[in-house]
Length: 68
Image (tube, rainbow, N blue to C red; front, side, top):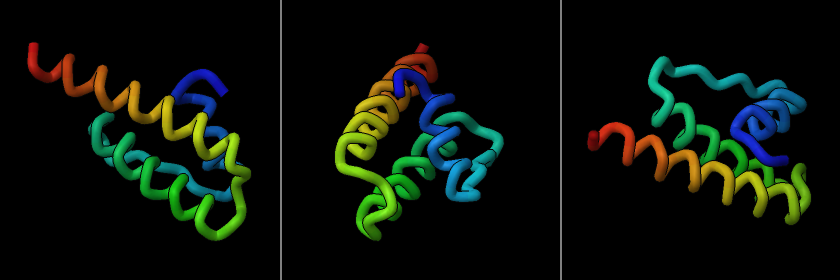
């Protein structure tokens, strides 16, 4: 897993498709969903951590883009 698209594909395996119309909101909801999957034992720790890091990076980049 390297990109936001990869995280989306992980969520899609569980029937979770997220599109709120604003990328920042999509990222935040993906974070919530990934955390829920991990807490329920559906996602392995390594996948969870990697997805979290990707989502944090994308969130930071999106915030920086909005500030400009």
